[in-house]
Length: 261
Image: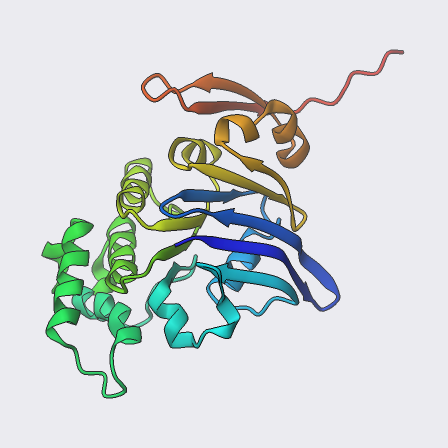
């Protein structure tokens, strides 16, 4: 399912956190949102998964206004994994994943055979079927992310919104999580902190700085030395990945210009 965000604006306490941001993700694309800390990435995504109401602009899913949908209808089309998504209670993994089926259940909340099958398929798909009876709080960081992705997949959405899904994971877990997301076949909109991971896995990147989208396009075209110096304040050296050819970055401090005296 395609998502189109047009002129999205968020103002809170007189501060404009997102300023007329326009971006999109096509059917089946993995699209990354990158930018410095405090640039507005999470605020923008919170508007997409309806944790925050924008001050202006539109979000359309498959051409339909997101905010004209009921919460249940939007939850059937869109699943989200916020940065702080951990459960406070020690549910079992199976119970956590089953929460993804709530938008599809009646007011009685009774699980059907379809619900159970969706949960089993989602857990198997992320390689976590063997964890079904474990307490969620006993899992490692990587295992928790797998389970939370399984919960999102059990929801059977057409759009997946992820806010820093690799945060606090070691490098092997980061690669595994992004491979799972890529293999889901869903349209994915994700904020990523690591520019090399974003370049390696994303079809398109949108760069946000000061709440505004300042560049959009393929990673190779967007992640230029000039843009990285301007937006992130670093000196970047571009090198090709030895296997995929994707652009990868080596960083150094951006040294101030020497004054002649």
